[in-house]
Length: 185
Image 1 (cartoon, rainbow, N blue to C red):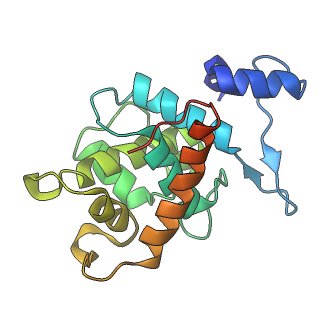
Image 2: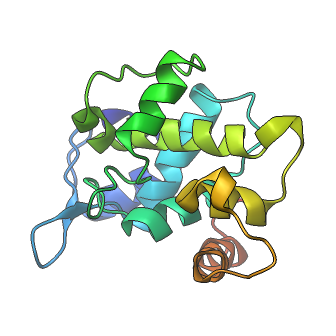
């Protein structure tokens, strides 16, 4: 996680809060669960996309919104969905072993509690879903498919997940309008 210090928005935010350079201290909620701020989430997505998945045509704001809907930005995820992207171990394992997504080691479900590992496998899955069955898919399809699986998507019925995603994405768009550097679809 020390790599997050290279992101200028995180560096600015952490310097204001008197964080020691190179050290990472997660914010905690009232139940002492570690979570990322939106700025930290954006930084993780930016770093993963620029250093590990630079061939994927994915916007970091889309990943952030998917992650926030999935995990509420909790480092260990929510319920049975581990990590900030809530990608299950079997899917991450399939991406790792069968599709060759090996920028990060994946030995156990605990690896997905590392925000960079979770973001990487979440991004790899989004990239795969965006070209599901060899054709380019629209955001509504790949967002729905991320949560329910590609065979369970019903685009005739607008789901609450899609609506929640769009609302969450608008928060990242609002950040951009205020002058920060979030990107959108």
